[in-house]
Every structure is written in structure tokens, then in C-alpha cells.
Length: 597
Ligand SMILES: [Ca+2]
Ligand SMILES: [Ca+2]
Ligand SMILES: [Ca+2]
Ligand SMILES: [Ca+2]
Image (cartoon, rainbow, N blue to C red):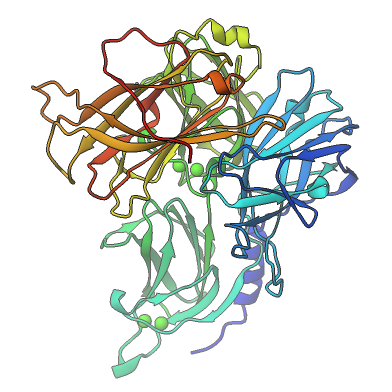
């Protein structure tokens, strides 16, 4: 066996071809004029860590540099999971930005990686950059920024005045899509000859192997096997550089499958295979000798997707869509990930404005779908330059689907969502619909998802479902929750059982006023008609007095099971409709019991 020195230039070339070069040159930077926070002040940092999620940090920037360039915010935060908690955790929070006088109000979920060096004994420091498109800011010279925690499950985060610095980027040059510039020089791979022997490649890098030589027993080495641990949504890029006198073929296999996936592109003596992992697990690489012999180089590049800050790929169907809200989000598409699905709540009469900024030389399209419809309601026209827009007025309230598809090119796209009247602060607009029910702006659950319902059924009773309602008109009238849940006594269980659970409701405070956080034990009767073959439906109205929270416009609800002996209960985003006036209805009205937590 001989070491072929010709491989070296190939290695360098392939790194250059796949490297992402982002050139920032800061022409100015500035710090905020004002800062305030109601978080817990510890050693110069304000911690957002209260149980009612009312803590915030706010910055006001003046003298935003004029021009056409996007603004980059350099953000430093501390993060941990509890008082004196663990190190190395990321900071996750909502960043809200607003331009005075304009009707711009954008909410963006931000995740900053933990950048603490290994020898940092505290290890809470997170840092990263986010970009605010100039088209959002327009001519504004003043910018308000506000940070809030996302939910009780996200880490505690801390900020101070210097946490956010605006950097104007004078020049941005991006060659998408690969972010990894550091390749691990993985060295020589051991010889393997079948799937059971597959050698686990632990990290992306450049590796070396050989085929065609003699192995044990005087046999010719015909094939080599490797494996990779992939998460759903990750994009795997494999490059096989063959020796000049050999023809080797590369195959990729899904977990628990014996057939190969993906198509191979061959250029000169390099074979490339790219694929999106559609399931998590151990995937297999097989390299087979067709003819010749010699050393090969295997380059393994794994690219994470983080569509809309989800840490994974937006799914290929509405069922696997990511919940969105008004804001600016980024996602990724390429020739093996052609479709990303999202969804958003719209009220009848609201107008949604979608704007898609796509990579150079690409053709991506936007589609909008009515609730529970598989035929699109509106389609974006052919992109003008690198931008596609879509405007539509909802003719029905509900969860609408948004689909981004790719027909040409690849890379990161930016999706901006604006909804008329959201959240304008002009209460009049909302009063016209106050007799109607409000659907939650955000919802989440860690329950088991079955046909659109999240089942809370773990023995430890840690499963939850949560809803956040925003921009509810303030007032004195009691709130009424119209709650629908599914219930049964076990997996695949019986019909006709009532739903019993704990309801926790929070009202974030304002200014120096504290928030309110209460719990109630709820039992909803089973209302399934006798001829319902499943019989899991429970329904009732819950009244929450509002005299002591008249000013609140944001409401937070969470449900949990109280005991492992309680029935399994299931919820989804539409399970709670909030009324500011009691709806006329023949349903049972449930008196909530319980007290302050
Ligand atoms: Ca070998
Ligand atoms: Ca072998
Ligand atoms: Ca994607
Ligand atoms: Ca996708």
C-alpha cells in the first residue's frame, strides 16, 4: 500500500470549496443610552428568573447609524439553570425590538451559545451576534430592545447595560451554506468489512482508508464500513476522493435499513453524497471497491439546521411544522431539504404580510394555507431580486400553514412575518372582536404528540402544556376559559372519563407592580356523545376573576397532572379559548378551587 501525496491538494481544495467566509468589518459601534431591568441584581447583572416570567431587561439606543446596511447586535448574557446552577448552558430568550413612531414590533427567539472557556470556574458567559435587517428599521435613529425569558423551562438569563452593542456591518460577504470551517483531521480509519464491524466516526473531519489491498486470510479488501450518529434534520455531506487508479463507490444507509439513500455526484475523482437525516439514529457509510486499489480520503461534514431557532429542520408537512409568531426568522433549504413548514395563528380579518429573503441565484417560494386545508390559499409571485413577498387577509380564524419551498439554489433564507394590528397597542382594534374568543399566541407541551394532541401521561407528572395569550384588552370583566381536553385512563384506554388537572395561571406585572401566580384544581366533565367511538372529549368553562388584575394584557396558563393515579389528559394549542366576555353557551361552568401558590 502506498501513500498518495496527490491527496493533499485535494484536501485543501475541498476545504476551500465548502468553507463559509463571512467578512465583517465594523465601521462603528455604540452602546445603549438607557438601560433598565426589574431582574434580580447580582454583581452587576440583572437575572431574569422569576416564576411569573415578568422580568425583563430593556435598552434604548439612539443615533442608529444611517445607511442601507443591516445592523448587527453583539449580545453577551449569562445563563444557568437555577440559582448557583450549572455552567456551560446556552442563553435562550425572546428579543423584542421596536422603532418609536413606526408600527414595527418584532419578536425574535435568540439562542446564544455558551462561550465560557473550560477554565472558567463560573462558566455562565454566552455570546453571539444577531442581525436586524435595515428594511425593518427603515430611517429610524432610535431603537428599543427588550429581552424576556421564553418560558419557565428555559434557563435563567442575566443582562446588563453593556450586554448589547450595535455593530454596523459595512460589508457582508457570505458564501453559503456550510458554516464549519474547522475540519478535524481524523486520520486513518481502521479496516472493517461488514456492517456489524462499522467504525463509529465520532465527529466531522477528514479521514483516510484504503481498498483493494490484502486483508487477513489473503483476501482482497472489497469494502469498508463506518457509522455516524445523526440527529433528525441534520444535513450530511460525504466526499470520497478516490485514488487515480481506483473506482470506489460510496453508499449511505438509514438506521435499521438495508437499502441505500441519496444520489452521488461525481466530479473528477471526487464523489459527493448529500442527504438530510430524516430520522435520528446510527447511520451507516459503506465504501465499495469497483476496480483498482489504493488510499481514499473520506470527508464527513455534518451541518445542523436551526430553522426559526428550533435547533432542527422545519418539517416537510404541516404536521411537522414549527409554530411561529410575528418576527424575523431564518431557515435553510438546499437540494436535499426542499421544503420547510411553519404555522401561525391568524384571526379573521387580520392581514398577514410575509417577506422572504433568499440566497443569491436561488429560487424559493412562499405558500400560505388555510386552517386544515392542503390546497394553498396564496402563493408568492416569482421573487424580485432576492425577495419574495406575500400578503393575504385571513377569511377565517385559526392556525394557518406557511410553506417555503426551493426549486433552485441553496442556503439560508430569512422569513419576516408581520400581522396587521399585532400588537399595535391600539385597544380599539381588539374591542371589535372582544366578544370572540382568543386563541393562544404561543403554546408548548412536552407531552406525547398523537394526532395533534399532546398527552400528559408520564408517571412522574412532569408533562405539561402551556399557553400564552398576549394583547388581551385590559378591563374589569372576568376572563372565561373555554377548555377542551381529551381524557382516558391508560394508553389506548376507555371512554367517558372526566379530565382532572392542575391549572396554573400567571399574569405578568407591570412597572413596580408584581405579577400574580395562582393555581386551581380543575375537573372537566366528559361530554362525548354516546355514539362517539372514542369518547375522550371533555369540555367546560372556567371563570377567572379579573378585578385585581384589570391592567394585565398578557396571560399565561399551564396545566399539569396532579397524581400518577389521575387519568391521562391531552391538550393542544386550540384547547383553550379565552373570552373577555362570557360566551353564551350551554356548557357546564366549572368553579375553580385552589389558592395562591
Ligand atoms: Ca479498508
Ligand atoms: Ca475493508
Ligand atoms: Ca430546513
Ligand atoms: Ca425541511
